[in-house]
Image (cartoon, rainbow, N blue to C red):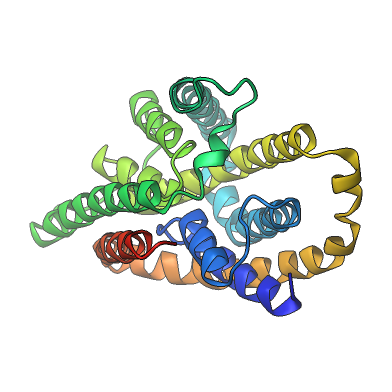
Length: 290
């Protein structure tokens, strides 16, 4: 794994992680095109560090907005925490059930199977990208029609029902690489009647809660599936991975500015179109033997 590979993946991860186009799909495709093994221990370590970099980008970018939206008073903070906990619990239930079902059905005769073993399947990624694209497109076009019809959006606290729907849909994102978490949750919030800026704020607050859990699961999987000598061999990959984390952080900040601008100017549906085109490209790559 060269430094050039690290920088390319860091930029791809940083941009795609925080845009509603599925970072995992883009990173896996980029790895395959560069001849890398997505399941290799050093690649897993790099991905963990890249996720860490984008998580810090989210915190740096949204902290001021979260303070204004959710920390103005005790009532706002309480409402925010309840919505966050409710959505996270439902994500865990839905995502856990789906993950368990997939692991038992897809790896019926394998005693130590992980759903992550399917993440390199480009056919599955293409289908998930298409599903995410349709959801984003529907939400974007609905928002566009509402704007043209003169309906004014009012930012208010999330209701329990709205937070629940967002959490449930986020659960579907966990086992399916290509089903963009940010795209799905923001679109669900918009369709449920949440103001789009508030949906964005809440979606990325959920990301900060979910990312450490995802990183911990990935590290646990690596520890269980790799021998100790393989883990020790990761030491040379530590410094390049740290460099990748920094570049993922910077790319993530750029992506968030782009996302907010497009969301606020009614161009959300363009991300849906992009996901549909990306699904077609990934499907063609799969048919080509990647």
